[in-house]
Image (tube, rainbow, N blue to C red):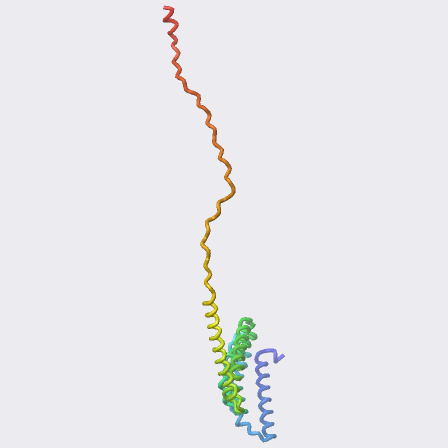
Length: 232
């Protein structure tokens, strides 16, 4: 089949992109929508997608192309959102979708394409971190900084009150601990006692009996000539 090789898949992706662009321009002409005010981010999105086309054409060794492709495509998508909604202030926290989120997406695609599980695991950690930064940053800036409904005017004093109350409670707890520590008398340790004498008596030591020594007598040497002298 023609679509089984990398070039066939790349041509299919390009064909889908061209069909989508043609349909978008056709709808703009029918409904009289000026797309040129919102079309310029595609000059960034399309080059980002071309990195993925190069990855498909290059096979598994070209897997690292997914990382710059994800970064450039994410930048274009954020610009497209800002161009459509006019909410350019979102860049204060939307950068987290580029780094580390888009980098993590590129690592996941690279690992899945190259069949390297360690890259997929690392990419998922980066994606989780990026989404957490984006979420907390969005809540902070949208509720406290960019709020136009007076929410920030209420939340900021509440935050200050909560922080001051926490510091006061912490200070009072520290003083209570110091007072309780000074009120309790110090514990005097008893001096170490000598060990008790052992009640087990040692068995009497057996003395070795000394055997009496036999006196040593001096024997005179036998004189063989003594009898002969008497006879003479």
